[in-house]
Image 1 (cartoon, one colour):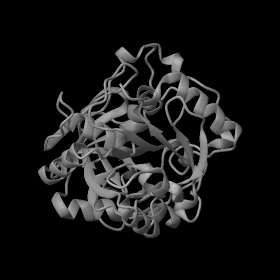
Image 2 (cartoon, one colour):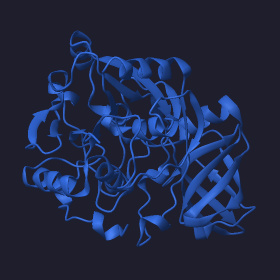
Image 3 (cartoon, one colour):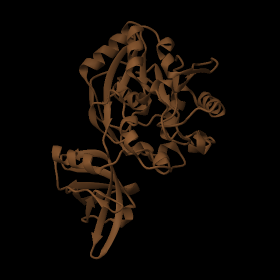
Image 4 (cartoon, one colour):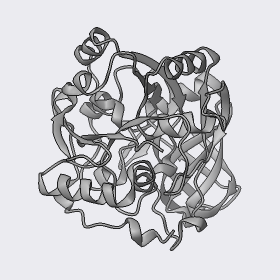
Length: 358
């Protein structure tokens, strides 16, 4: 499909730079097939679902994956920023370098440098490979848990570029850009639909008889990459690691068998569930890398409803929601959201999409 079909005008001031407080007071636009749009708030979610439905959350935990460093070449010194996006070994990470042209294969980068300050420990890496789009393979001198500790000390929260370009990350982001249920370290971007949940909302969902299940997909920095191709068929998704364990798969299949709906919290949970689903719609235990790219025409197998934030024009995420609810329906929903002042993207408001019955 033509990528320009997924374009729309988004005023700059609609991109949220901070979340609302409390988290579950964010606005929620309900989109049902062939019904009028409904303006609610996230705290209304228990009333919008049914007893026996199951919410599926991504329990990945964001690591401080943005590193500032120096590349020295004789007397010449260049500042380089690396955003880690996939671990490939105890001492190896794939990363996006900026500007990538300042670094060659075989050169060393000393990380922990932010302006005039320097990380007091040692965190250095060699550039083992360079790929397309600024991607590189970094081999660190440290390994395993020791490397994790060094990254935590030297790194910054990897705020999306449309926020980071307007303000630096700060202490508030340490909590704001993490779900309350995050537990599996490895993501370099938050599963942002989950940022709206609070202990109080969890209690209300429990009281309403709505189940809660967890899967893990370590969101990579590739989620922020723009679609540069003119046609969706020419766009390549970066792979991300994930897992659906056997107990979760069994529980979700039981939900479906007794007439409940599977409600994905976020596009990351949805992409993982669809990767794990068989042709029959049954979900199997699954572990590995997924680069599933969902565009209109895709036949959904595992997910009945999707809670997600509002996405940017021409993004793979807007393509996914257009596949789920229909391109024209989503364009209308986004027009409504922009006119009514909804806040967009990672720290913004949310929508609840119900899939049209096939």
